[in-house]
Image (cartoon, rainbow, N blue to C red; front, side):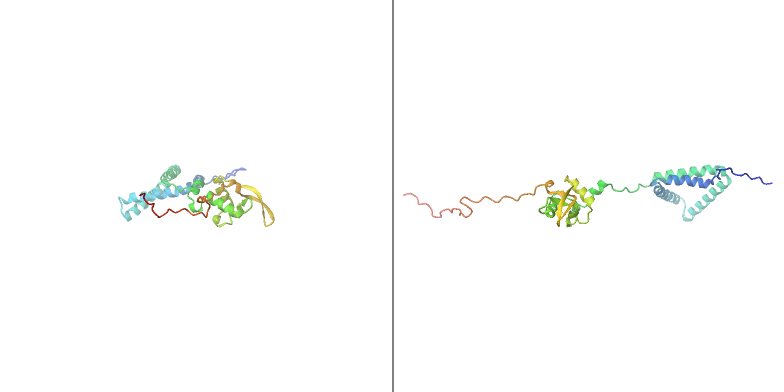
Length: 229
């Protein structure tokens, strides 16, 4: 007579051993970058082991050694299941630690500061260049909006937040103010002329000679003075 035990309410069968181990490994690999580092480190370990094995064995001998080792491990695992259930997790943990230890560092993304430092100098916003564009766009108005500056060839391809940050780094304030364009009032972020450095004045003209601009410079008398008798 076969006796069966009925499960009580809320009782569920325990998952298989290999499923529990896989669940634990997935939890570890969920850490950002852990799976990539494990993959790279495993490749390094396998390459080193294969090269070390090649120092003592030839091509077919290496494959034969791997096959014999695999058979011995499988036979021992089936022969001693109680030891296998502890040896397998310890082996996996040891392999993961070794792989993470030898894994090459992953390339880091450049920070915002590094990206700004590596920006093409020809695309950098300078104070003189900004002042020139703002004065050209503003004309007789008090300043120019960022939206109008972006339409200029000097700032082609930029976005408004990027241009605003570049202007702010020059210690030039970017504020909202009202402009009348095509008979319509528009309030947007922009740069006022009063916040820009004064335009450089041209060099003064050389001083005019005495007697007015049309006066001629007296020429020396070419006739020599007669000597006294």
